[in-house]
Image (cartoon, rainbow, N blue to C red; front, top):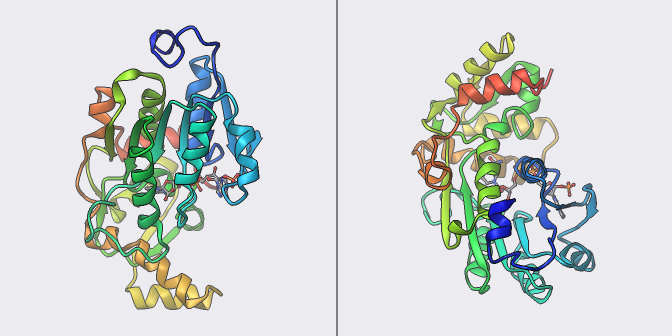
Length: 293
Ligand SMILES: NC(=O)c1ccc[n+]([C@@H]2O[C@H](COP(=O)([O-])OP(=O)(O)OC[C@H]3O[C@@H](n4cnc5c(N)ncnc54)[C@H](OP(=O)(O)O)[C@@H]3O)[C@@H](O)[C@H]2O)c1
């Protein structure tokens, strides 16, 4: 709070709410909590958030942007709406923006872009850089919370994670660390112009990750590697259109190919400490009752 008051964003202006989009999601929810824990005013926005905000309805944008100077933007994957949103934000007097992007977007060999997600991230990053605002970009790799509240949570609950990811490993990043970096960038002056690639401190394989979750939860959970063909066939059998099943298999490619194994320095650079390990994530999630039962 003191640091923000000392910064040029507030000066002698009255305090402005910090807008958090995606405020009900894995990173946004944690950003909201951390800002409020610092006593800062927050406008938590999403379709199901405290403040109604829908990327696909530009009529909902002005109400959340009014009076805001700093914004955390979690974009809608597969769209290029960050650019018009930022133009609108500038008209409302925004000064600082922190964008949620993704690791590997500057590497054409990183992943297939079947849903236009990478294209949307690239356009969003360019829009932020060209905006004239103070900007910071967060580029996280795979979230550890995919196991507890995202993509893999149902399978973890069922006791068996079946994926076309072979022995691939990833340096999963804890969304708590992502939120800590975002809050630092929103509230401190030294992060302008920084791109923070965010990962955990080391890569773990899916077998290791699932074993770590088993240990933390005291439940018997296993990982079963599948071929891409087998995985797609299973999803289609469960009713998914073949194109969607193939898109899910494509999303797994960085895990399968190990392109998300490398460790990034964003957490130490932004926060001056190491990121949390996967084991710390698994244990703290268990302590908070956060594993799907
Ligand atoms: N998960 C990962 O491993 C990972 C890794 C790297 C990058 N990312 C990127 O990080 C971003 C967030 O991912 P996440 O995993 O945190 O997602 P998430 O937990 O599903 O959160 C998505 C948020 O966006 C909101 N939202 C969805 N549709 C919306 C709409 N039409 N208008 C307004 N808000 C909308 C959701 O709230 P409502 O439903 O209430 O609207 C929710 O708050 C995505 O761009 C993703 O590609 C994710």
